[in-house]
Length: 306
Ligand code: NDP
Image (spheres, rainbow, N blue to C red):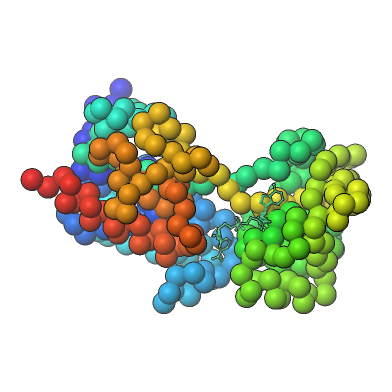
């Protein structure tokens, strides 16, 4: 059993928000530990395979390049990062984080656990995930070669992945539940103009069924029940916050996001939250997460210094 450790700041999550907080906390002279449950850092950044466009002054080819820069900067600043450390619970009274490798205590805890992809919750979906017929091109692009693919959703992520698939898959059809795409114009315009991508508006899947490697999607399309035959499905319908770790300690909003004040303080003293796990601002972006991190780190320094 490890000896209990104590840090000025313990950050849970190493995505954009967590690493930004670590860089700022070190700049302010606070000893800083970042815990990441995965084997690699970066959180949602690892899934961005297109250009990073929502951070002024930065023009990088994909999320991995940004993660690499952030990691280098955090380590040079003196932050410690531990991969494959699962945070299992938090004792708010002692600001102790129980982890898969023993307890870690901070003068402040920062929740930067981000989001998890939302599911459609329709019959057949779970089976498709288990059989790996719902997949992510960003993780597995060569597998899609020559296959017919349905992409569900109309946000940036759905459109970015549909565009990525268009050069590899045999056919791409994007199913959007409303009559307009949510994705930014710089993505939606190329999608709508692309000769190899069909877009079906007002179309909502209601059931998946698989027969061998063939997938049938039953969907409501403008009030009519339709059926589509594909080889694979990609679901990009947004995310839900990973706030379960502190659900009994801090206030959450109706959608499960952590409620914070403008300085990143939760309703529990000493526990802060940054990034996508917090009640979302009007528009979420990498730049917003970095800004939240800076504000929270400065507030932590003010709150904890004598
Ligand atoms: P979004 O929340 O932006 O979009 C979700 C999409 O899924 C919408 O089209 C929504 O439709 C649809 N949807 C939601 N629920 C359902 C449902 N039950 N059935 C069918 N469709 C549904 O999520 P994204 O993952 O696309 O993006 C998340 C964030 O990440 C955004 O802020 C985005 O800008 C950012 N991002 C940035 C990138 C970059 O900088 N390169 C790349 C990818 C993402 P409706 O519009 O009708 O609600």
